[in-house]
Length: 160
Image (tube, rainbow, N blue to C red):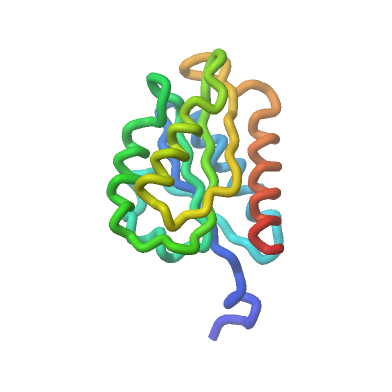
């Protein structure tokens, strides 16, 4: 039998797409920040590592990807399209992207629009845009620590 506190543990999944590993680093840092908050546990999965039905097992879903051609990465968009048949009402959500140059929030804004269209049951409460120095990276200094803080703040909102 599970201990009583396990019944009240909030579960979060971070689903991401990454080509060069920079977005994965942000996903991992967000999850690490979430796991620092008592009462919340988080796992990270790449889009191809999880079935959309499994999203039902989580209280919160965070979706992120790199900015590709002024929008979210196609694999994450396809994942969201597939998830549109899953009942996600009452879930809390957030988004993140990685970008270069002056493209801050470009993919996040389009990603949020796609989520609101295809996954209307998710209440989006936050977003993060992390800068990469070039197409292949690395991340700009302090972006991983910003992602860690983002995760902690997200988790705090879940348990309040």
